[in-house]
Figure 1: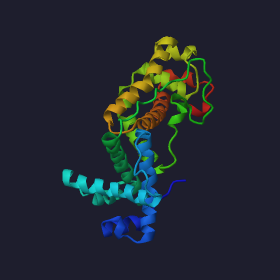
Figure 2 (figure 1 turned 30 degrees about the horizontal axis):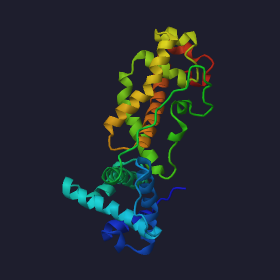
Figure 3 (figure 1 turned 180 degrees about the horizontal axis):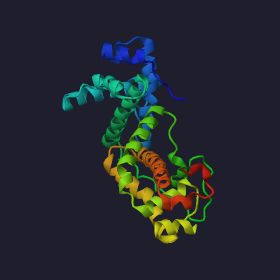
Length: 280
């Protein structure tokens, strides 16, 4: 279960400037949040990198938090950004609670720290696992989210950091907003078939798309990998697992937009047959 530090612990850390100057309860509260996230991120990026080998668990946790503090101090001198102030300023610009906004900002910093550790000490990030669509004859996933079948099960969100997942979902929503207008009509129809849990062999989809089922399947099969590669270029400091999650979440957000779009298109109405819950 994820650990969520109290706001009073964050505030004490900011006021006293360093973890070691905080009271014991605040120290334990913050260590329990930062340490497992950093370890998980480094492990996913490069499993050959071992942080603080041979150290006792308590000392390891303190080492990890000091990496977090050092990153902010060192980066402040390079960019002019006062990181502690920035961490707290994001709370005023976010729709989330102050606690959740702080955790999201901290997670963003920890991803950068983990990437730097792996580049400095490891063999580089592992190659991203391939993303595959189900075949035309494979049964549609019985998951409540039909788009989850687009990606491998190993891309399931890591429950160790709910804040990071929330942050990625917000980013995915923004990506979907900017990408949706450029998605061609046939590709929208192909994606609509996934949302409606229908097969592209249904003649209605080929008729509305103006493409053969085989052409639509070929385009659909390429879509997740193409999107993943584009996101990987845009967010090159992220580890492969984070990119796969962002790909999944972006496709889910695109699915929502495609449903709204299709509901407003008269030509798409026959595609909703049997799926009355989606009909406008």
